[in-house]
Length: 117
Image 1 (cartoon, helix red, strand yellow):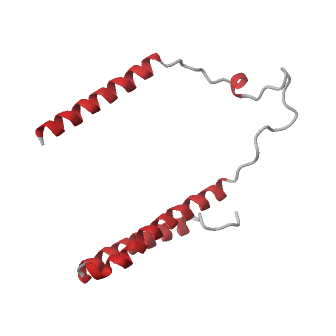
Image 2 (cartoon, helix red, strand yellow; image 1 turned 180 degrees about the horizontal axis):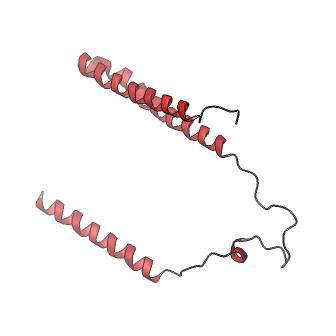
Image 3 (cartoon, one colour; image 1 turned 45 degrees about the horizontal axis):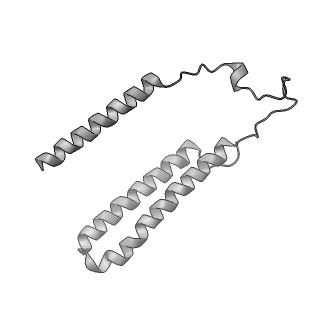
């Protein structure tokens, strides 16, 4: 146990030293308008080079992804029902579903689930 903690500290120290060394030796880039703008043979571009992006659609996709992952966490619980204590299983499942419902209500009240803005 003692050697395991020492190894963890050594790995953490090496990682920290490498990150600090990388930050010190990395080429610093100053972001300005000319460097971040698209280049078309020395002329200003005729139209926008970026496609419009809907942040609301992105948030809906992230919420869907979170609830999709949580469903994949709930499905194995059905299989383990016959191997676990029923009371502990019910408490765990209820706690998990309550967290899901609170998150859903929070997103609903924040207006992230409405399409008309």
